[in-house]
Image (cartoon, rainbow, N blue to C red; front, side, top):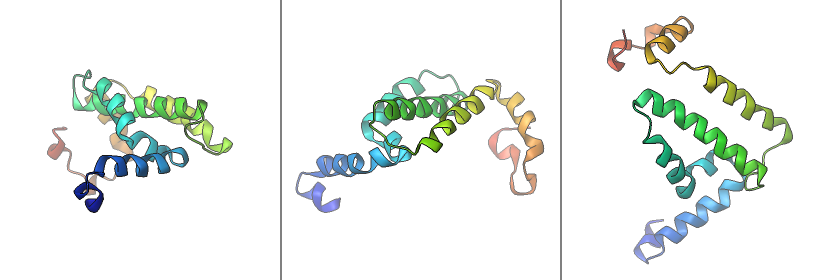
Length: 121
């Protein structure tokens, strides 16, 4: 990558690497610069970091689903229902950060997590 950049091919090389991985890896797909840019245009509309995180998850799922439908990304048939599972889990997260915290804190090992470091009570 450094040599490609030095010779003026940095962006081309980056795009070739991203495009070669993205059809076979949903994670690589959402990290492609063009996809990440489209997602980020929606993320900035959310009012808080918590809501941006929730929106980011939903937008990534939607982008992957669309890419699978248009055959830009190939996943095993048995993996497709995970998109629905993840989508319903994200939808179940309340928009209120404190409410969400109280819903999940019983499931966490709080000996390794200090809520006050994250502004939580």
